[in-house]
Length: 177
Image 1 (cartoon, rainbow, N blue to C red):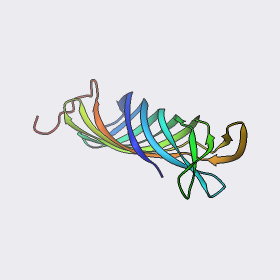
Image 2: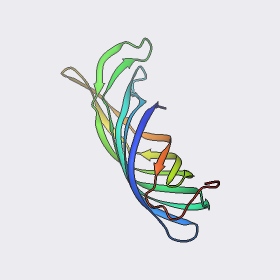
Image 3: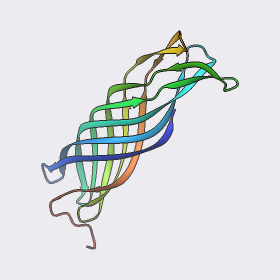
Image 4: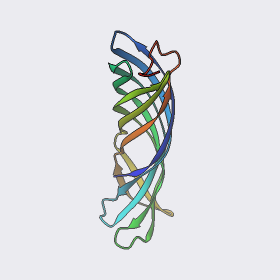
């Protein structure tokens, strides 16, 4: 498990294909501090790594539930960087002198969310995203000595919420405006 925070910026293009069907493409970049745990095969060694940046490119398909509410699903490619991890003794928390290197990993993501218009062109977006970066073998090192390898499979789940502006969104005006 992991915890942390993130900030995301992005750009994209949506097109309304039919009365209620919307499709689009997008790209985004994330700056984060999401901390996760590495566990050595030796049950007494563990450490923390951070996902400190990622980017994604993908496509989405949505359904206009009402003229002001879009529900959608998305999928695509993602890349992320994970920091090195200093391994500690699981019993007393002392540093063991063993660490793993940082690395960058490619993967895929799927997600779902909704956008609700609150003013012309302005939307509140909430999204869940699951990203799988595949399995990686990380070499443990301690000074000039090389230890065991750790097999690590980063799976990252995020929930984000934020404000989105859409340029030229056709004729949508929220109720009461």
